[in-house]
Length: 314
Image 1 (cartoon, rainbow, N blue to C red):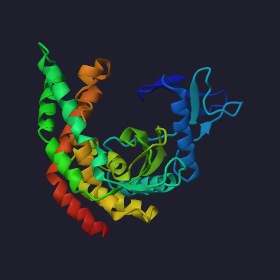
Image 2 (image 1 turned 90 degrees about the horizontal axis):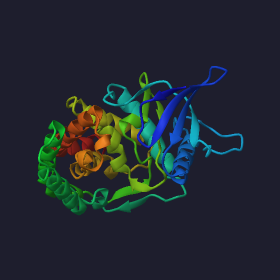
Image 3 (image 1 turned 30 degrees about the vertical axis):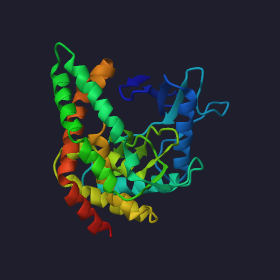
Image 4 (image 1 turned 120 degrees about the vertical axis):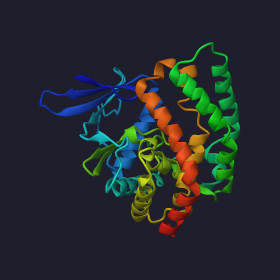
């Protein structure tokens, strides 16, 4: 058994049994009822043809062995999608994402519905959040290099919150349904040019599909690599609609706007040195800088990309 240094809510291990079979073990530190609901959602998606690793039940038929507490999953070979979506991978990701949302639209927890796009992010609350962290850094006698950068980035983003609010106010009503909940690139495994697995579901909760598509289609690690992401995103959305024909064009076209506004109004991880210093690692610092740069790039290209997607998807 060897530990896998990934994940924040669990401690993860690679396990090899006596027959040489490999397994992925997740040892939980949080609320088990919440973790159980997340596993049940993953199973629901798997039953709909989404590539989700199979969870091995205990001898009593349980999804979690509460004595550990842990769950045991099929081990999947591959690499995460962090900064690695390019070429035909865009369509592969779009196909799986479309299949995922088509399946989760059937989940009994909530039927799809239309909601005002201002619900993507509470920009009013964001004002207070940014003021808090700006004041917090301002009261410190000294700042590390990352803290100094985070302070300046927070002030820049606070100055753009009115634009985030305007972006959301200009969007049409968008679809809200049960989604994965944390479909960032570390939770998407790729093997070659195919999606090997969708990982780490959250408990079923209705959220905007445009927001979730943006989590992966406008991933900061990909956006900062250059402008190729704009054409790639269009390919992702075309494949998504082919797999999920009832998806609304308004939701797909609004992906970049929703992702841009949400990221502009998010204090993560700018607030981490204040709220959770132990979580600040070199990789988080790199991600924080990429996320900030990606938000500004999306804002700069928003109108052109929005029009281009409308033309491609109309």
